[in-house]
Every structure is written in C-alpha cells, then in structure tokens.
Image (cartoon, rainbow, N blue to C red; front, side):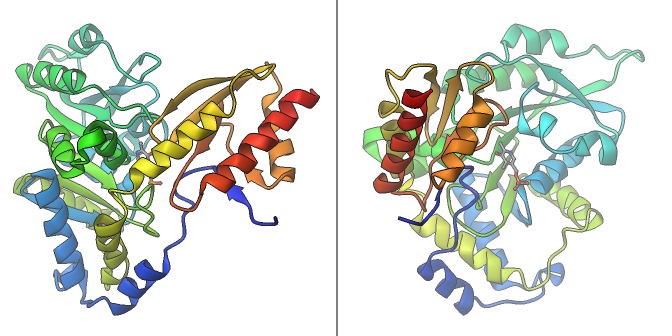
Length: 345
Ligand SMILES: *Cc1c(COP(=O)(O)O)cnc(C)c1O
C-alpha cells in the first residue's frame, strides 16, 4: 500500500467532501465590517457551547491565546503558566514580545499539572519589586492528558481568591470533553462543565475537528471587545472568512462526537506496542501516544518508520497522534512497522 499513515499531528487532516461542500455553499460578507453571516453564526454557536457571552473567530490558536493574554494583561503584568504549556513554550514568546507581559512558568508533573502550592507561592504581593500577577493559564488536554475536574476548579478558585483571572488553552478541549463524557456520550454537557470554570477559553477547529484552519476565543463581552482590537492590531482581521468558518461549523456538527474513535485508535496503537525490547509506551491518553525508546534510538526509529510510510514526530519524545484521517488499518501498519524496528535492533 502506498498511502502514508501520518501520525505527526491531528492538524494534518484534510477537509472531507461534506466539509468542502459546506465551504462552497457558505454565505459570506466582510468580517472586518462584522458582515459575514457565517462567521457571526460560528461565533454565536461557540459562545453558546462554551457558556460565554461572546466569541471571536481567529486564524490560529496561537493568535487566539495571544489575543486572550493581551486582553487580560497590561504591560508589566504577568501570567502564571506551565513550563511545558503551549502558551509559554510554543508561541514564540508572543505575549512577552508583543504585549510586554511576563510569563511566570512553573513545573508541571507528568500529567501536566502544576502544584497548587506552587501556584499560590508564585502569585506576587502588590509590591513595586514585582510584576503584577494577573492571570493563570491552564491547558486541557495537555499532551493528550485530560485535566481532572477537581484540579481545574481548585486552581481556578485559588487564582480568583487572589484576584487573578483564569484562561484555558483548550486547543484540544473537545477531546477532553468527549473523554469525560465517556459512556453517557453527552459531550456538550462535559464541555460546559470544563469551560464554565474559566474567564476565557480558546478552542481550535483545525486539530481533531478537522477544519483547515481557525480557532475561537470565548469570554465576556468586554474581554472579547479588547481581543477584537488586538486581533486587528496583530493582522488577524479577516474579510470573507465565512468560507473557512463554514468548515468550523461543519466540524462542530459532524466531528465532535466521533472523537472517541480517535481515542480508541490511540488505545489500539498503545496495546499493539506492549512487550517490545527497548521500547515502551510512556502515555496514551485521548488521541496522543508517547513512546520512550532506548537512549539515542529515536531518530533511527523515526527514519525507519518514514521509509515504511509512517510519520511521527520526535519533539518531546516520540509522539503519535490519531485523527479523522487514520483508520484501524493505518494504526495496524504503524504497529507492524514499530514492532519490526524493535525486533531487528
Ligand atoms: C496547536 C495548539 C495551539 C495553537 O496552535 P496553532 O498552530 O497556532 O493553531 C495552542 N495550544 C495548544 C495546546 C495546541 O496544541
């Protein structure tokens, strides 16, 4: 078989025929004038789903988080964030570069959680020596890990008690919602339970949901009005964006409830990789599997897999991400290739 099994990220999905049709059919207008009916419908839909007053469509998740951070914090203020969180580590330092906002990164445990005692200790008193602590940023899922509800509510309560607002980088929050919903299958209620904890939430349509682009920032009317100005300033004011917003609306209709299949594929992959010499599954949560291999063997495994038509990444250990465009046959090919590598070496 010649097709590639691409497990580098859930961003590699291509729009389905139904999604392309929805894009083709989209009614559009100039969104800088607020005239695009499809963008407006998407924003209203996402605000309602997350239980927030307003939402703003964004080209990318990085811009959505950036506009959120800059809407919460003034220059000389700070946000508390995980050392390995996307909003600290993987966004080019944008909050510091563009907003003069200081990050206060904290260690996370293997599941992505910061200790509440560390958060409490990092919140600075009002003293001219210190940047003013303004915001706590959490991420759910983090590298596939679903944050326990008690952790989210505990961290948010602590932050609010000390006058901080709380932002969620929910690039994969639909995966968390579907995992939390479990057998009940009520992902909408599970999503609300998470998003109700936060003052602002950023969600992505271009990851597990399979849209070609786009994210949304959700929050109060005032916060979204500030973010709207910042989005324009950072070059994110879009024109006939309904063409892409239609893909996001389609994804919300058709691609949320199916996320459990991606989670099942991740479990299938992890199960197929048990008992191999020099190789172990470090974690397999929601749609992301991390493998540990014997020191120094990672690049060789990635190269071997690539030659076998299986793509993965090696940024934080070997990572395999399941999504809309991989099925059980693709997962089984990945398992066979990884097993072959482990057994020959
Ligand atoms: C992908 C991702 C983002 C934003 O990504 P973009 O590539 O800018 O759309 C933000 N946070 C997390 C946790 C992500 O995985």
